[in-house]
Length: 122
Image (cartoon, rainbow, N blue to C red; front, side):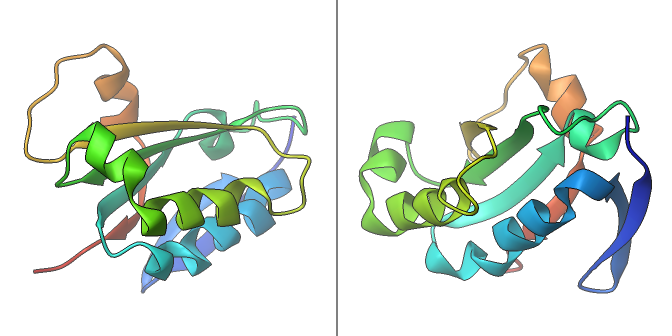
């Protein structure tokens, strides 16, 4: 179990697990590596007191490319590497969604209740 702490993201405050703050800041700090990403949403235990050191970090990434085109892009690969190589001991569950499509997966409820870490304007 851990405490939730306030994290300021571009003038908005979200509460995140204290154990995950450095990792979440790294996710935000490196977003500029990929201009193809429209939105990044943090969801799951990283937003709850039930988070432990062993908890993974759940991310939903939205972009306007198909999954195969996004996964093949150099900038997306560099962004994912910058996240997953940070500190080397954190596990991630990273889901990608084409932002031009509508999804009715059950996981979308969790994602919609998550915290937006980044959203491209315009």
